[in-house]
Length: 544
Image 1 (cartoon, helix red, strand yellow):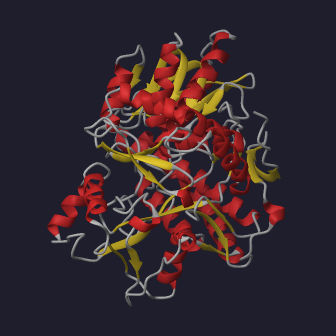
Image 2: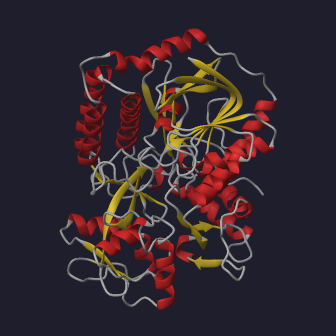
């Protein structure tokens, strides 16, 4: 196995990973960045983006408003100190994006800002189809060593701390041990746990994000929280982007069911839109549509611009079907985008394991461009300070040899299980028997079947190529992640909506929200390799 020595290892080259690499490089550290895809278009913003929150800013919210909102985040089971840090530093990262060449301003030099009181924040609408391209070029200007088509497979832990990770080149099959003083996990939202209505790999977020970082963190002993919460979003059928997206209530148009009934009549109902949409679907009143025919022309023009920048394939899909947002109803669907859990971190993005940090949607607390950019920057600053205080670790050669044999075992098998078959079976199980409306009996069944799959099939996976070996590693991640999701869902005996009801844990057998459950469900791996589960309190907002 090849050995690469570095001070900071960043796993994931999306928004959080790029900002982490840039900050650590500026602090004089040697940095290695791994991305399973490519830096240019890797991550959830790879297809483009049309909005970014600006946090505390004269045209947005005050510091006092940010503190008030952060304090309220506790009921959403988010660390309020992370929430405040994101809002406070958001505009700094906006200015960084402008420095990197991302066109956030209008032609007259102003920002176009959507103010959305019911959603807390103000967003800059911008022309960001090449956001990731520009950010990737900014990383390339640093001293960061970039390893594309390289999947993080397993963290390396020695003496109670993480000292790097093993990476798999998905084209050559070469394994590399990246030995680092500090490691930052930045692989984004975990997709490919559920199956979307349009098929196994038509995921709303990046389909490469299979939970590798989260399951590596779990196996290394990190505490995991919020693993029970499924994130749903409303998207255009077979096209990705949502057209309406993040807009003020009076600019959204009408969401209607098959009978033409308007579903969202107040800002409060708008906040609960995903739950309302799911209820309509379950009760047989789908398909659902956006009716934008009465939306003012200035808003429609902004919609069209934004469609050209976030998931621009949407415009092609409209053209092929002769759909016009001014004349036609636009079909919508609900997509089970990802599970919104991850390693427990503090406001400095430290996990519970020394030497290991996490940023962006890999964590349970931050997402979107603003959350990813701010937390990536903070994590790198903290990891760099940690790296300055310790020596460079040595590669544990015997352990790495055993790990290499385990990772490469599917290549030696002539007969066995195709990883795509196992993955699909697990995802169908989670989709059909856990889902949006959860019940104890169905989840008990799902957990039993999942454990059978692991016992009977994971050591029979076969791979005829490096790509298939990657798929074997992904299948194992998907199984580990699914177990955490099911066990956490069974443990939380209440229903709870987080963040505009997009993040949902709905128990049909416990349909009410119980204030006694305003705490984290924590999953850990014990010294014997068993999954343990308990709770801990969400911290209070610290003094200014």
